[in-house]
Length: 159
Image 1 (tube, rainbow, N blue to C red):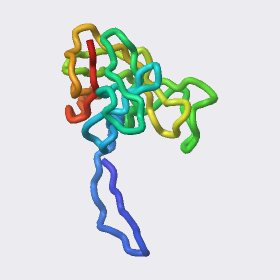
Image 2: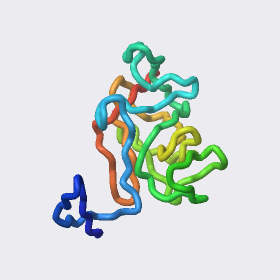
Image 3: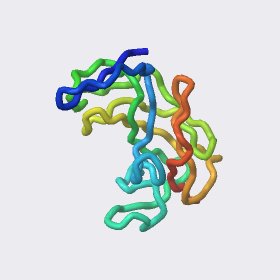
Image 4: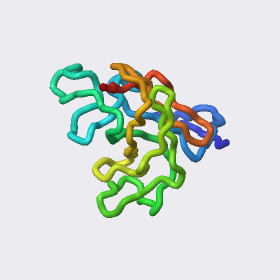
């Protein structure tokens, strides 16, 4: 626990106790925490129903294919990084590897760490298991350190 005080325009709030954890995962989505995940097929399209997002290339990911999930809150990486920098200089992997649930089916990522292009954004490279359900709104979740993200973030899986 940590005591947090917010000061704005010279006025301080009363102290609040905040739980500090080594990670607090979340998946980026088109609709701020619900709906279509930012899950990218290796051809650069989003793993979403075909033509479902105007102006973006979309298609369902297929079983056995690898996709890239953009996430937040996956904790410390090795080697460490200076706050505010991107990770173009070297590959930085998370100290703890999450489990990815796709329609409840677990998968261990090939890579979990900082995305090279984006400051503070994690990238998870994971293959879609052969027994993941097919559909336009399959729940996509991260399990890590006893936490499981919401089942309201989804992706599309095709035959």
